[in-house]
Image (cartoon, rainbow, N blue to C red; front, side, top):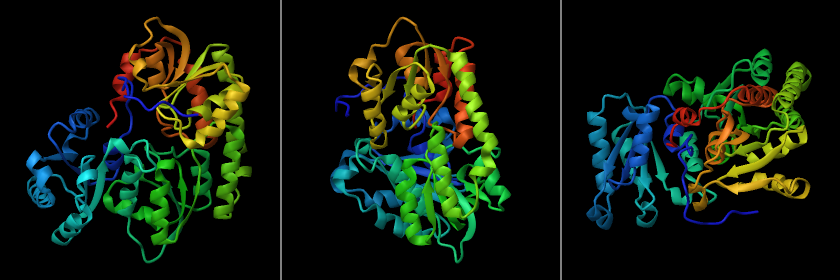
Length: 413
């Protein structure tokens, strides 16, 4: 199943994590955008909203620069930025805009020259090209690859574990973190890095766990340098999928995990029953602003006994296709709605007596109840299932303030 390729509608609830927030997770990093003056107004406003104003600069290019090329202008811009900024910059991302896909600035050569001039700074290229969002190399994927390319090759790796792809840290009381710590393994994740030097230690780990698909290419390229190994464990709310993922981690590490986390599984199962009782037959709408695999989540909830009626998604990613097929065969009444279709600009005026998982579904459907979940943030394993179910049970206790939730969610940047 595929959506139509149309002019897109961007709702006020279409927020969350864009390339600025992702790249800025690295401590002591800074972003320089090279683009026409009108190109990044949305990004600039979003950066202010999310608190990144002092970590971003813009080098505006004119029509003459576009015609003549602006390699030298980027060099001059880097000089001026490093001379004027008060920020302590250890890693500088230099982003060119989508028009550069047609111009072909040799950004790698420009940054290689800058690296020789400023050896204390690591320079990484970036492409702010939303037109590539529907390709195999969208900006989030290439940005994460560039982020991991900043990690060095150490003389020797250790037997610890690094988590890749998560925007928000997995809590220390998560069953996987506790088992790994009990086995004497340190768990490294970008959210725990307080400095650029700490971030560079991510590549010390012999083992990696990819938590989001956007990190897959970067981790693969990193492993070619370091020789580390990895498995994937994407956020899932299906009990059997979580067990299967833990089996893969056991094989990679050579340690026992599943027998050690029986209590976490029981807590998840108990939370599912309590959430079903609290939600009852209330219609449930699932949004891809809440989870990267909305169709998988919808299918899981249906199998648990929830009354899922709609799925709102901007794109239908390949890993969700099997779930889409299962939905069409077994639950044909479930609507799959293109959230950025031009017709979606007319929002439902009457309140829907329903529970939406994610802000975008809540806004478009005008839901009475909202489960405030965003991009699977902080969700992993059985604890992630429990957090989701506890959130569902809590969200139906009172009417949601959608405007407030959207403001807190913030625009995508």
